[in-house]
Amino acid sequence: MHTVVIVDSEPSEISLLTRILDDEAYRFESATTGVGAKQLLHTLGTETTAIIVDWALPDLDGMELLGWVQCQPFATDLEVIVHSEAFEPEHVKQAIDAGAYYFLTKPFEEPQLEAIVRAAVESIERKRELERLARETRDAVRLLDVGVFRIRTMDEAELLAIHLASACGHADLSLAMRELLVNAVEHGNLAITYDEKGHLLQDGSLEEEYRRRLSLPEYRDRRVEVRLKREARAISISIHDEGNGFDFEKYQTIDKRRLFDLHGRGVLVASATLDLEFVPPGNLVKIRLPDGAS
Image (cartoon, rainbow, N blue to C red; front, top):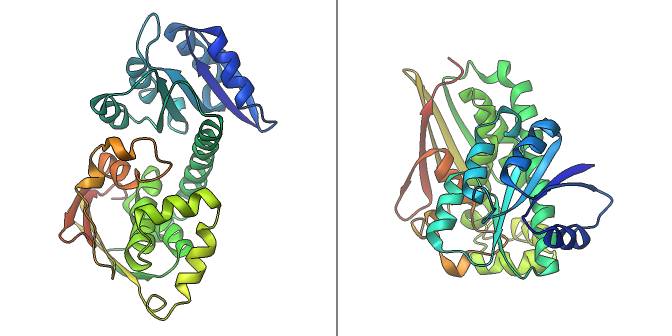
């Protein structure tokens, strides 16, 4: 069971959110102030999976609480969803930089809220599993100095993300690595556009489309080439797909038109976590990070 903490100054809003999200997979806890939320989160510790917090609390705003959460050792494996009457792009940028997972505006649309919370929970489950596997494989790959990998499928992208994070000594970067590798396979080699992915997610046919395109002559032989090189106390990684590239600057910033889509933030999140350099036209990205395995 996943523990979801709801922080809102209005008890009626807490009741509404709890009713909408009523699911046997969730256990709900709540607080009406920022101070109360801090006390509750301390008590729950690592039990918390997701937090839904109002941007405007009576004693501190959602950004202050978000900043506090990100500094707590027990909060490395949880997602924060911020909601408000309205959002300005600069507020969203601040929240993303501070680690927010998603943003909701009132009044809530029930299907969207349910989908976002489900996605947040699945994100944490995926992150925990990737980090666990990265820690388990650390000893096997930390001696790797130079490596060239070629991947074709989503499963291979996830597996390589684990090994890259392990080789670098940064298990917590597995999810950011995964976002870049999946992006290279999905949007690069398989040429699934942003809008196409949105429609495929809505009708639940994304996995089916992956399989279909992987079988087509124009895509089936494409590979994403990943190169790793260990230098003096640093590691450089390059990810090169066979697609036509994309407008990477567009996806490294906040766009009002994409603000509340259920996808499209992978590059933004990876950019906030990793030192990235996209090489025009965008089908090559270079990463440089300290060697945590040395």
